Length: 364
Image (cartoon, rainbow, N blue to C red; front, top):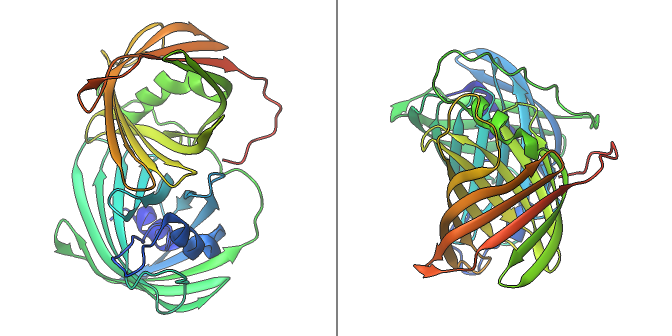
């Protein structure tokens, strides 16, 4: 298992190793948010496997939506990772989505044992974890383990990962220590973008394609004669392999989004958690993608959007995304041929107008 992913699975603890179990009283996203709030901050991690100890660090924050967490981590000789995670009301599970600096992508489902309203982190906390990871070349790996906290206070947590398996093969137990660090309020050091080592399309190629979207924007949505305005801030993760977006609009829930290349599906993939407690997953198949291709006027590609509202209702929308106007400070997208439950839905126009950079980084 990638050491940093393991380290951050430990550091994230509740963030990364949690999902709801069936209980008499319905557990909600808010219950999990309260469970995990003690982990918000910056941590040094020490993991010991087979007598060898590796050090790493991770920083975890609550999104402005108050319904998911965002994390970044480095160390242990492994690629830096950027992660988002929250509650999926359709499956009633806690889920994570992670992009790493090597171009890999992973999703995980986690179960907190004896989860219930009012549960708090302590030595009774334990979880079961299962992750599906795709390396940059599309190779699939399934990882699982159980976690148990053995000592807990607000600034130091100790525990152990047991019954670890990678592709069904047993792995050694891992002991871990987490030590809270002062919050320096500084951005992680950006990971240098690697040089291309083949002609295969990689995460780096997709990042270059979508880089024009990085920045602060005023957004205008138009559909079925209705116009809605909002704002969107897009930034490149320090690991250079995904985008993080925070968006707000009038009369709509705010959104926290992570987007990057999934080498398993070979699509640009996004995971969204909204302030109402809903979740969404998008998959965009970029038309005629190739090295050196950049966002420009024309067809962008086929897109599929799967949404789950806070009450568990699911919808799927499929359509074609196009860029009808492209300039440095103004971009117009349209969605057409869209279908929801095999019914035609109104075409959508989304106009992006770049806003001045005040030099103050919004907290996303």
